[in-house]
Amino acid sequence: MSGLMAVFWKELADHFNSKRFIILCLLIYLAGIATIYVAAQNIRSEVTETTQFIFLRLFTVSGEIEIFSFLFFLSFFIPIVGIALGFDAINSERTSGNLSRLLSQPLYRDSVINGKFLAGLITLAVLVTSIVVLVAGMGLRMIGVPPTAGEVLRLLAFILVSIIYGAFWMSLAVLFSVLFSRTATSALASISLWIFLFLFLPIIAQVVAGMLVPVDSNSSLELVVKHEEVVRMINRLSPGALYGEVIQVILIPSHPVMWVISMALMGVEPNPLPLSQSLLLAWPQLTSLIALTAVCFAASYIKFMREEIRST
Image 1 (tube, helix red, strand yellow):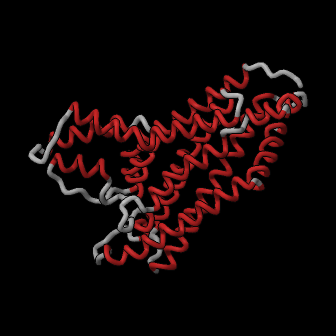
Image 2 (cartoon, one colour):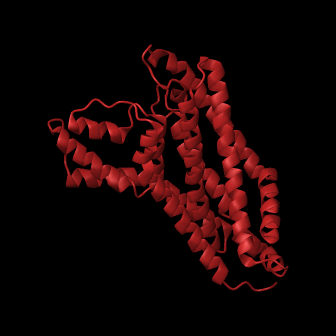
Image 3 (cartoon, helix red, strand yellow):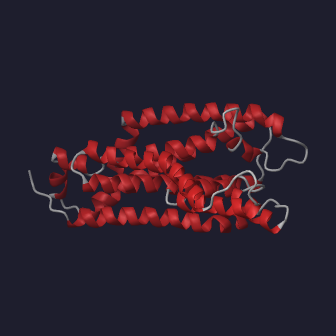
């Protein structure tokens, strides 16, 4: 345990003192402030006397550009942060020769990878929590509507899910860091996979769904729903799609997409879901995210524990 904590504190200090982390923080804070300013300006035109969950709308309302919202911004930047924290976790130590010298000390090998992953996870958690708290504080000052207890609990759930989502990308980057000897190769592999899942998989999903379940303006509601189900099933191969479905259910309790479609088929007007029902509805996607994170880290752990490390 002492070896694990030594690696953890050393890596944590390196993360917080690195220029890479400072640049990422500034970029994310600036983008978060911009999106919350746009959201606060547009809330006034959308809120009525019967509007519920006004404070949560700070995180979901977009401007004239549909994608310019805090949720889109966070789903875009979290993978970048996770990759930046993990792509050189092992191979940089191996290339510099520090890994063999580190393991020549009275230190268990698993303490190295566990300590590095834990330090990256804490760094990611601090970054995500701080940006959400910053946005919430600015939003409270701008709209003057305090959050209810239920909204605070939903924001806490949102922070936890966002950390899990970032942990997946970090564990994937650590896996590539173990598999590839060059840091540039591991970074390129991680970014390439992120770009494919973020940009190209939705296009592929639409094409495949159009071939399997073609729809047009005259299609029935059942056929349109089947088409969307095929699109969602293919998109769920992407962790970003799983994350998007979870946070939609958590932060948009009045009209989560999956819930509205199900209720439309039954001819029932959807009502806001309590937090327990929201989490239950999102549990399969959340479980998949946790499982993917565990699989990636387990693969990197096993590969690191079995590889030969020569002294230099």
